[in-house]
Structures are given as structure tokens and as C-alpha cells.
Amino acid sequence: MKIFSPAVLQEIEAATCEAQNIDSLELMERTANAVCYEIMSRFLPSQRIVVIAGPGNNGGVALACARILLERGYRNLEIFLFNTGPRLSHDCDEERKKLIVIDGIDFTEVKREFTPPFLSKNDVVIDALFDSTITEPISGGFKILAQYINESESYVISLDVPSGLFAESNANAIHRDMVHASLTLTFHLPKLAFFIEDNAEVLGEWKLLDLEYDKAKIKETESKYMLVEARTVRPLLHPRRPFSYKRDYGSALIFSGSVGMMGAAVLCSRAVLKSGAGLATVHGPWGGMDIIQTANPEVMFEPDRNEHVITDMSVHHPHQAIAVGPGIGTRDVTIDALESLLKNCKSPILLDADALNCISRRPALLTMLPAGTVITPHMGEFDRLFGKHNSGEERLLKALEMARHYNIVIVLKGHFTAIVSPTGKIYFNSTGNPGMATAGSGDVLTGVIAAFLAQGYTPERASILGVFMHGLAGDLAAEEVGEIGMTAGDIADRIGRAVRLVQTRGELPSPLA
Image (cartoon, rainbow, N blue to C red; front, top):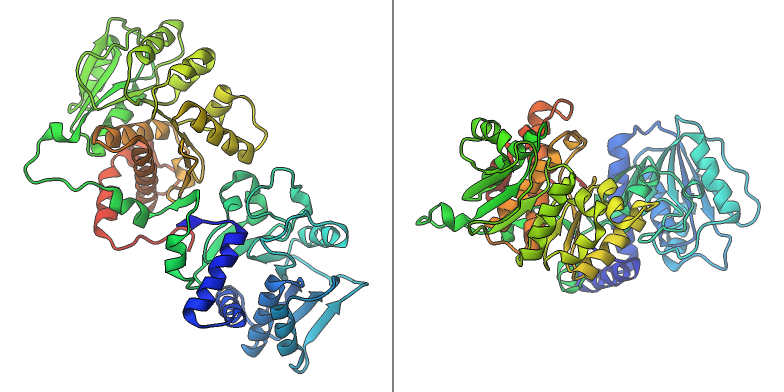
């Protein structure tokens, strides 16, 4: 699913009207009906609802919603239309005309003075003051109104976006001056701001409403941002040939483990094989041999000369993928070994966890990364590599800059994990759940991506596939064992099922629908 700017979305809306032979008012009615369906599915007709509409088309949608709700028996409505500017938009004015002819409505058109209605935590507020096209922070009386709505503790339904939130960059915005939604109902396609952790408190729960925009126009319109879904990854998967053997699916070498941290190597190597690689070899301290070969008998073990840590990262046999990091620690001898590997390796490799911490202790290693290398930091590891960042948006922009500068793929882990390509594209993942915030989950992700690399996928595609399948396996685990109590091993054990699900089902339910 593509993610567009507000300006491009307006072009798509216009193309939709032209292709479907409808006018903008008909599209507004379609939008309002979709919004009303959501409201009616959640609240009884007796619910007190206060509609706060602005002068633009988003306000027009809110007025249309009010009219439809009144027609469906929702009579406990109070409607406020803010007409404080030079004029209402054409469609908003048309919806106003349809609304004011209804007998007995509680409608106030605010032009100058405004006495806010009493709001309590038992009320529902429909927020449509501003939409995603705003270019300046809300101020003056509108800022005071936003703060008043927030302090009321009412259940707030924001249309398009919470009033005051920009669709893309909110670097200098002040969240307390925005409306804080309980539920954001956005139209057909998501906004970039929805995938930034900083904005979660403003968005609340958010849901896409399918408005049947023109598919041809969406397909032909380029975007730098993409939400990865099953339909995105399904065409990327290579089918398996009947006449094939293990080496057709690649060999992955994993430098992993140290004394007390061999579980990371167990989880990572298990995930490699569960994700379809033909062979997996762990190079770890020789003291960990029994652990690996007992826990994962299918995995080969290559012992380091040191009993407790990795001191040598020489590559002695051909491998299609090399992964470094889970549980290796940050001792000087291990950093030396990593430096030697980077100096001698010409192919893309995967670096995670302690490999990234090793580099943060010796930053010059960043300049040695082979082109196409994949790194998979969480926010703490990212900041140790590239400096302290004060927001998720700032961190994402830095990731984009660093991916281009070093010609690497950055998998920035989080709720919507972002795969940042050196070409300037960003792919946000749609699978996964809070139960995956558990020890070893990142080690499993390393193994999954390494397996796709071993099978011949490009670093970018391996990362997209790996992150999606890892999250989907976590969702399968959550269904079976619950988010609380889920372990990294539960995720690894369901990777194969996740891949099969994507291959065999027409479309998986979207977590955003």
C-alpha cells in the first residue's frame, strides 16, 4: 500500500471522480457514509455526540455525517460549524445547506464569539476542524478549543487526521496544541505521520476507511513510502523447484554467541532453517558447541579457538549469507575479529545486536561496510551508532541519510519497523504485536533475514520479506499462546507457517482495517 502526500491524495481523489463519473460531493457522501458506519457500529442512538466542523471539506464530511446520523435516529447531536474565515469551501457550504433544513437540529454556526459546549468523559466528539492539508500549526482560539477537547476526556473521533497534526513532518509541532483522538478515521490511504511513534498519543487507534479510490491512478503514481502487506510480499517469494536440494537454498554463516549468551545463537540459527535456508552454520566459542548441537541438531557448529568469546571471523567456506552479532559481546578481541571480517568481505552481510554495539565503540568500522549490507538496530542501538536523537521522526530522517551515505539497508526496528533503502525508499511493516517485545525476538529476526539473503534475495527484498514474515509469525504466536507469555522460540517455530499463509491465501486481513 502506497503512502502519499496530501497534495498527491487530492490528485487521486480528482482522478477517482473523473474515472467513476461522480462529483466531489458524491465522494464526500461516500466518505460520510463510511464514517457513519463506524460510529453506528460503536455507539447507540442515545449517545450524546458533539460535532466540531471546520470550514474546509473535512468539515463538510462532518456535516454530512451529522445529517446521516440524524436520519438514522441519532437525535442527541450538537453541531458546531466554524465559519471564521473568508468563506466555506464549496462542498462544505453545500452540506451546510442540506443540514440546516432539518427540523429541530441543534446547530451553531460560529463566526466570531464562541461559547464551548459542556463536554464530559461520557460524550463523543467528532473532530473535523482541520484536515491533513494544513501547513501551519493551529493557533489562537482553535488551539484553546483543542486543549479544551483534550481536557474533557471525551471520546474523540478525528476525521482524516487529528486537528493540528501534519500528514508528514511534525518535527516542530507541539502535541499538546493538537486534538488528541481516541480514534482516527482516515480515508483510503494512510499518512506518513501515522507510522512515527511520536504521534501515537495524538492518533489513538486509527483505521483506514476504504473509499474505492481509482486503482489505476494509485498504481501509476510513484511514492517513496510503502506499507508492506501480504500482497506486497507474495510476488517476491521464489517458488521451490521439485528437483532441488539443500544447496539450492543457500548456506548462512552466523557469528553468534559468547559465554552466557549462547541462547542468541540457538534462536538465530533455528530461525535460519525455519525460514527456508538449506544450510546453517554457527561460528561461536568452542564452549558453546554442546549447547548448539543439542538444541539445534540440524545446525553445523564451527568452534572458535576461544572457549568463551569469538576471536576469529574468518570465512573458510563459501556461504551465500553472513550474519554477525547476536550475543557476541563487545570485547576488544571480538571487535578486532569483526574489523578483519569487514576488511576482507566484499559481499553484503547482516549486522545486528552486539555487532552494532561493537561498531559504536569503533565508529571507523562504519566506513568498511560492504555495499548492500543490512543493519537491524533498535532505537538504542541506532543512537549509539549515529548519535542521540530526540524523536522518532528525527531518527527516521537520519536513517534515510545514513542508508544513502553508506549505501546500506537499515532495518529500524519498532512498532512499524521501517526498512530504509539506500535508494531513498522507506517500507513500513504492517505485521507484529506487542507480545514480540521479548528477549531473543531480534535474534530470530536476524536469522529470518539471513535465510532470505542465503536464498538469493537482494538485501532490500530479504529485509522486507524477513521483517514481514517475522511479524506475521509473531501474530500467529499471539493467536495461539497470547501476547503475554510469547517467547522468541514461539516466533521462530511459526515462520514456516507464516510463509505458507502468504503463499496460499488470497489476502490476509489488514491490521489497519
